[in-house]
Image (cartoon, rainbow over all chains, first blue to last red; front, side, top):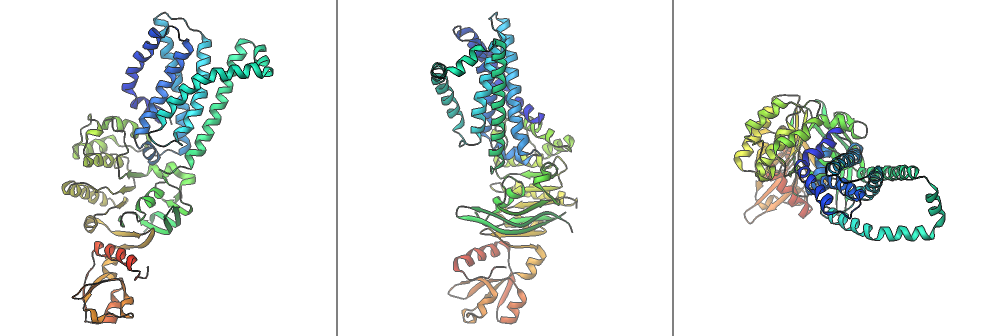
Length: 203
Length: 293
């Protein structure tokens, strides 16, 4: 299984070189951006680069002819997603630190929670959407969610006051660790769904 | 002789096409050629043997084990060569090896480099710059480098020049000397099989017509030529299919004794090539004049 996660870094060795200038671009030209957003974009970069690579090749036929079970292939995707997120956060933190840009653990918690939620939505889609359509669907949905997500959230915050009051009463550490836990739960559910979809596929 | 691959009552249905109740055995230590026309169900069957596709009904056993419980053990012992390039095109052979090799417990790096040398494969060139033949050689080198006991190949010679085809057949011949190794491969080029195959499995419209040794095919199938006046409803029953021309008929029979018994010395019998057999079965379906085996 670790071999499958390692595979992502063999595939991405050139993209990783572009990763650093990519993150630096956001650090220098995105002064108005929240550091959490930079962490999120960086996490996305690694995970989704592996998907776009796989979309071009007959990866599923290759992986399924090797001695791996379908469950392991999906597990490597989800565990790999977390590994990529940690790597991206580590690199981004180092770059922010080197260039003296402030960030907090809260930024990391928010970006991790958001990454896990977005990944939970997009990972199963990879196994459903027709080859070649995955990348545009992800980019468009990411932008759409980014635009309509906050107004929807504030609408609910104003109208479903019980939930808002409950959240307001939580202490800050409880709130952030709670969101990370909830997003991990969503991630686990998404993992289960992907296994079900993948087990039924023909290659 | 032990069976390495056993398909029992395997059925897979698609829209407008199905593999029906297939019973197929592949014997250990032999080269079995898998033939049939385009769309006969060859790729579907190979995919079911590789568990890339799951049958709707029936059982697939490889080395006496099933995929539900022993997927990894089975695949450790199989070398698979696909009909198209499944490797990442942007990568070079070295990186592809770095991805594939750790999956196998018995990966033999020295052996892999021997094949790389033998096939003259450049290690550092992106695979997308390789010709189709070279890409096939990469697949083959990888499939042969982990001591696989069963080598499965889907159309390994398709679209390749005759020199590479000979080279490939030579490699297979070498592998055949190791009697533990089983080779099962599909091809449209039946002359390849004349040289090396021990068994031929022939599939037609999703049905396995036969799985005979080359010797059994020679003993049973025959091409019969004679004059048209010998044909009537009764005599035609010995044939799989009859092709009439203005000067006479050519027909395929699957039992030489029946032909001798029916026609005596009035007809000429010739050895039926695999191509003759495939041609007549195809024609036989069109004219609905054969009894299936």
